[in-house]
Length: 283
Length: 327
Image (cartoon, rainbow over all chains, first blue to last red; front, top):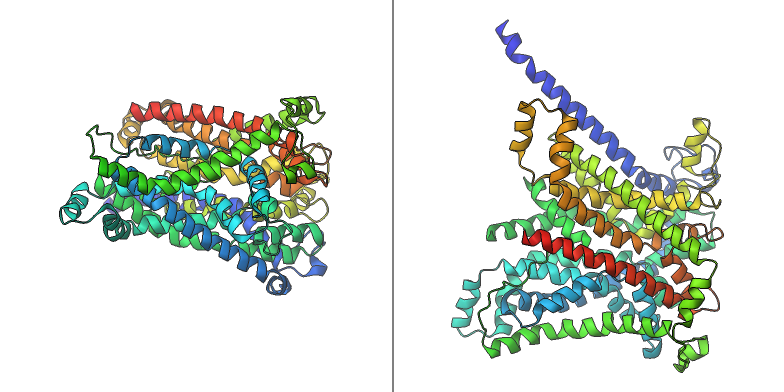
């Protein structure tokens, strides 16, 4: 009898928690339905594509769409990979020194630079694209890979400066003071102490810079359209425009184009978490 | 614990696509004078990024203003000798029959998206703020729509909303509602792009608001519960008022984002049919790049109107944020 009274609250608690988990699962399923649908359509046979109602599961699954990706989309994927990596290198190279200066060297007027970056982020991408178009036309950089790398980096550099400044502010001043006492100049301090200690910030910035440049459509469609090297976003866009019927191939390309986002969701969680813990130690 | 710490940072992370959310940690404002050699070093480290700022933000912006004040043809665009015409492009734009619909669509699109993204995001944030198994994992999964390339989301929604073979019409048909021409009928196209954009924006609101919820002391809820306040009253009397600063930031940032949404609309409907989903962003693009005969001047003029709007709200955002940072 006593056991019954003490035991009673527990199952009820467990039941409400179970109920909440179930609700959470349903909500997540609803939210992610379009993602599932993309996968499902990518595996659907051509002859089932126009079926009404559509098959909810890829019962007659085919990899036809993915074969088309391998046949037709590899150059686009390669271009996107190169542009993504280029954007990462450029972004880190520009932003890491700036973060160091803003966090530790207290430049006069540094606040203005920080403010300008915040404002720069608010300019709509389409405006930047039009300005870049006019600019690149006179420089002959249209439809070129370096041109697209520079344009894509404008998506990530302000964020990167912010992250590096925040992260590097967490490196104790005493440590840098000690290096200075040992005769290390600012360049050496930056290269041998600050940069290695900011590894997590570098990883975080790199992942997001890569993702944003990989996902970019505005710059790609204005600056690279029709060129010899087009990124994957244009690959999908041309697909939609040209052969409206092969939706399994379009969706298979979309699935492949989503892979970096998936990888980042798995990997970045760890690195971003590490970055926050490092920041928390400072407080 | 692992999961509770990572999300606030992810917020600042993604926000970088448009605007930084987190208060920028300024260089410690200690007024101590630094030796000039350090000033030189500091500016040497800042030089590349400053040059970059001038070349790749200021100059394109300047070119854009210049474009909007001249009469360009393809030839004069290449040769660079277009005559200066003052505000003529702006007049053209204001007199254009597309102007009024584009304005209305931009306002409706932005307002409806903001309201739904905020309400859904807040409801989900409150829900996921409870402790239950898988809570953190599911919350992380909610980020997927936000991380996907926009062309992926837009093309997936296009096919889901396809009139004949889309899953949405199939589901509506199952409950006895006739097919809706989501993307091809002028009365539905704006709704369609709004639905897709809400789907993309909900995770951002969820993450920012969730991190805001975590800073509300738990003891307040316990005290209110002891006083007999139900869940609904606890929400309206504690959660909502205390979340107001975070809500303001979320909505203002959302505003700046949503004003410039281009990809989704362009990929799904190209602003059509018959301008029924045209906003300033897609109109500007169509003028500049969408036709065989580009009209760069008016395109840039429309774009500059958009810049002004974005900057006004952006500066309001910075003010609000600074005020909160100071208090």
